[in-house]
Length: 294
Image (cartoon, rainbow, N blue to C red):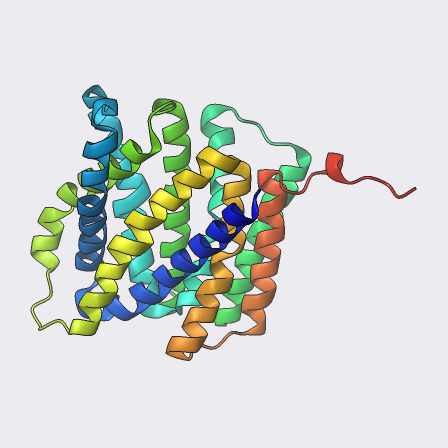
């Protein structure tokens, strides 16, 4: 990976880390449904001109049902669940739970597509979920309210991402990434309109919340997708997915600096355990790469 791509990867992690901060600020005023409607709607409007300019001949309309499923599993559902979670737990905490996405992707891939796992990958998955358990312990209670419901929501969101990744592999292989990004955001935005109509906030929204939700859609979603898929095309998916390791670091940093969110020992230990488990699961750490000295 070149120095330029390494810098872009770090910048992408900083942007995605900021998305948890933006949600934390915007969701109390908009609510999860309206906030996510705006996020994916703004992202679709930003991506659509780029799609029509460069890739309009790459849109396969016969795959519209698949774009719809992708829009639900990769955007509408997980974004809403994460938005709900940020009402009850910090931006950094939400990002830590979200970092278990590769673990769920591996599990769904094994159960659905038959991409069976090695012993080291299975060990990585168990280690990753141990990290999640440490985060749960850090909240000190288990009840169907507040932080516990936020943890459940984050878990369901990461499972949805895992389904989405494998659904894309199964039904949308070979599709231009920008087509996937734009069509998934556009279909998700259309599907969420009825819910948004029901749950649109009745109170006046502050200008600060509008700025944050606009940044969430334009920068943290549309612009971030362009950076992400550009990296995949240049350095490959394995290296690009290492952004997973940096996002929680930035999310905790932004939350601490701008919202004075506390960074606890449970968060640091849980983060470390999840990321080591993820490294084994996605193959960034493998026995074959460990060479004896001498």
